[in-house]
Length: 166
Image 1 (spheres, rainbow, N blue to C red):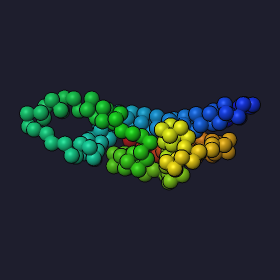
Image 2 (cartoon, rainbow, N blue to C red; image 1 turned 60 degrees about the vertical axis):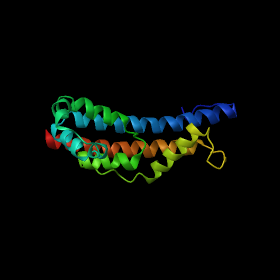
Image 3 (tube, rainbow, N blue to C red; image 1 turned 180 degrees about the vertical axis):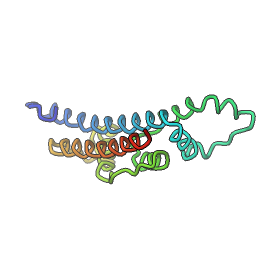
Image 4 (cartoon, one colour; image 1 turned 45 degrees about the vertical axis):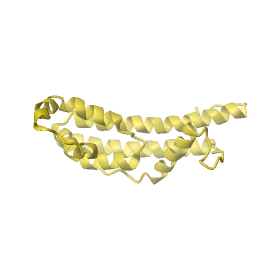
């Protein structure tokens, strides 16, 4: 889509913004789906998630709730995992490391792109100072390349774990 010839400059600007936002959405979807599916398909990871998830550590549980929580553990875990904002890469990287023992590759450049995406979505393409963010073809291609590489590395690490645990 980034290579499409769009003669109208406003339409081309809008298309680039949408592609940029969409790339970050794809990243979030991958991180969410990969994490949730991996955790729910492996008892060891499931247990690790319950013991390491920060939001669970802060919750108190009465003895009268114990059996109910145990019976609904998968539902509770899945709900908690779905509520995570997967564009919060520092938090998500800690979850992957604590639960799956997977360390993310460097994501500083992608984190900058997440912040740009925030301005594109929530400030109509302007910074807090009101300066317009210009997204060009090169920026879009660069982001796609970085996200593909990032996801590929994580996917490889997950597959190595699957093969090791099989």
